[in-house]
Length: 104
Image (cartoon, helix red, strand yellow):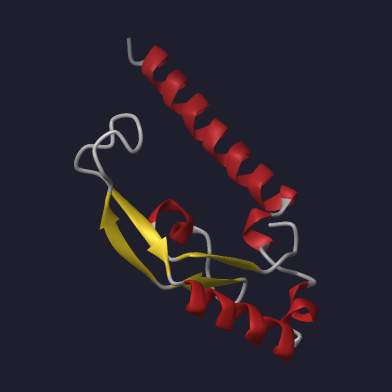
């Protein structure tokens, strides 16, 4: 989003926006949380990242000098793109409200 390459665990919500070529996803294994390890943790799991895989992704990033390829990274999250999506959504909501009011 800031033009930086991301290395993140390949689990949960961040996989929705951590996409190649802007991100590398670290392998993981799910582990059950112990009782009282976290509040309300009963039955929950934790994505335990594979440290060796993360280190390999970091090494590869440096060796391939991939940092230079991100001058236009994350265009879908630029201020202009996000602003346009907000504008479109607000227009949709407004138009739906107008339609609801005029249908009465």
